[in-house]
Length: 94
Image (cartoon, rainbow, N blue to C red):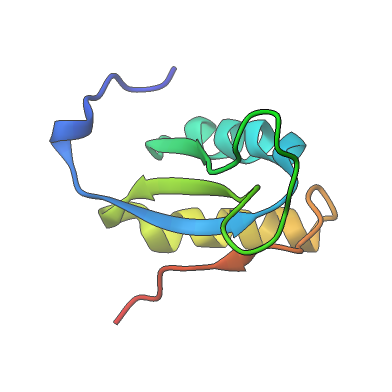
């Protein structure tokens, strides 16, 4: 069972950006199953299909304290072939 949370409970960061909207639900579900708060931000403009620059991007936003865990799960999904791996990690731990 997932925990209940509000966005005020933690700081959010953009973690992963990609252009395959169908992968968004899969990534979100995997993170939720591992008790990592995440949101999908669709940067596309309705009625304007384009995947250049930030147009058409889909971003996975996660809680800052779980960035490493979330990145590891996404990386594992890429290695397992569950998602394409055509995306890019945005947040780097310092």
